[in-house]
Length: 59
Image (cartoon, rainbow, N blue to C red; front, side, top):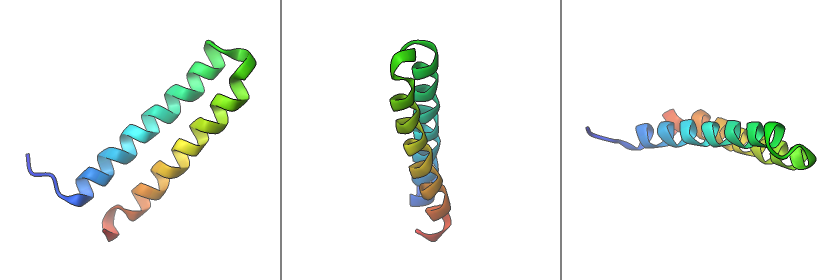
């Protein structure tokens, strides 16, 4: 399995999107008092994953 830079950035974007989703879901279902903080952190992970995905073909 040959990984070049674009595949690594793509996998990183996928993992960060999964972590962002997990943060949002944990905030909603487990810690409802702190849901806004978890949601803000999850959206931040989504934003960074989006930036990695946008840079994937240009690296």
